Length: 480
Image 1 (cartoon, one colour):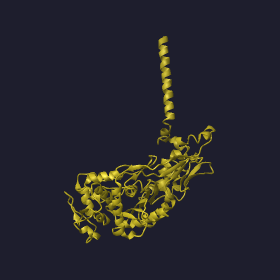
Image 2 (cartoon, helix red, strand yellow):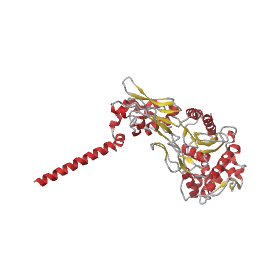
Image 3 (tube, helix red, strand yellow):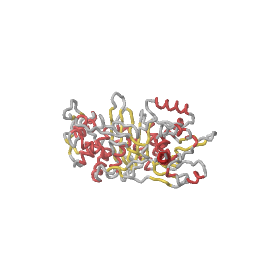
Image 4 (tube, helix red, strand yellow):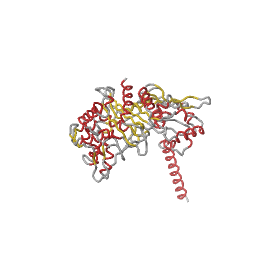
């Protein structure tokens, strides 16, 4: 009897210890995960009672919390249609962009704020959140948005990077939305406003600079040219051209643009720099289909960041993955190598390609948050520049810069001569069944010591050069 009772007590003690360990683990290590679980409705009950910290750029508040008459806090946004791709929104039941990526820092629950908030917690006071300082250049962001709006495009996006650090200086998207409209504390009102925005076929809630992919047109020839340089060519190497090219096994030939008839692209062979400047489809279709071929182009694209989702903030704000088709069918590879078919890219990705060329072959990891400050103003976190990939040697990057200069000097971008764009590439992608094109321009500047890499996409009739002046305005604003 005593032995049985003793075993029962031991078993009871072990079960109690196991329960204590489990509770400790859940509260100490799984607290944040359980708190953020979408099935946990309690996380929404106190959202409006927390004074979230501000999101700022160039010292200006883009988002902040404002106390209401009912002693709750409502999120407010400055010039929100311009900056909503950066800040996102904070509603009664969801959040997006930096409001989501930096949610715990903004609401004061981030472990990095534990020391600075210790006294407040000890005294039982509610602690305000920290400040998120972004990398965005306010004037350049405003210039980008205004230029996209005035372009007449149905949709548009622009990204500008500091090529030397990876800092995202511009991230604009049109059409946009006003985050103040959905930051109401009334759930029914917020639901109706979200439904209206989601029903809009142009998807204003979608950040087109980061979260949507488009066929990049001839701007992708920059990646193909990089593959040719990596395979041993130089910008002076004579490459195949000609008015028409039929890939092996293809039923239909790929032709140059009608406007190229009688020009350099009609010749049998021309220097690579001229084929790039004049954007000869036949040259780059041949490169993708035969020499250096699909594997070389696919590997070069991957080296620039294609195939991967690119994280820009805390692992919770990522760009959609860009892609080039890995295929053994020359016709598909040829089409993909002129930026059509299955090749798609985000504006961020094409800005990264440009930045790698500007930065002597190194692509820096793009980032949107520069610094994190505790409520007392102390810095508790900052972002150090980090190399993401090295797709080119410095010498090959210089060749590509020269090729991009030739586009402006004598090629498809010559209308930008005299502007702040030192080098660039135009791209026009047909959109099946639509009357508009995806008009691309990638470029860098200013002057002889460039550091800004820009990608612009607009949806409208016409050629990619129509997006060039927008890139120039962005570089002007950054350089000013």
